[in-house]
Image 1 (cartoon, rainbow, N blue to C red):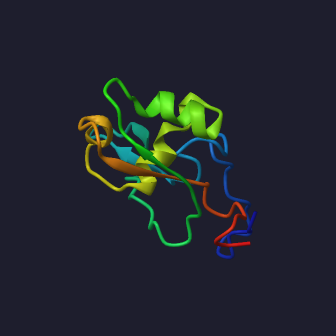
Image 2 (image 1 turned 30 degrees about the horizontal axis):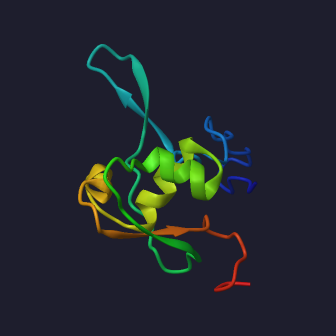
Length: 117
């Protein structure tokens, strides 16, 4: 954790766990016309696929879903977003919409593997 050099204060911890795709996304404040401040998350941009270590390549079959694939390959259904990030598309549902499509399952960023050990 770094100290804010302008105020000397520590930044607020992320309200999301390390396993969340929103971990580390900055929280901003919107001030309404009546003066209320409403917190919101800034936009999360798709990360670069550079540096990801491919774990597997999966050929989509009828009935495949990202949550089921995440459970199979990553051990947790709620990590479906990691597969989506490794195959950048606007709509993650498109990744499993066409049987025969090949999608990459990658290790999370900063996890050492064959390609980045």
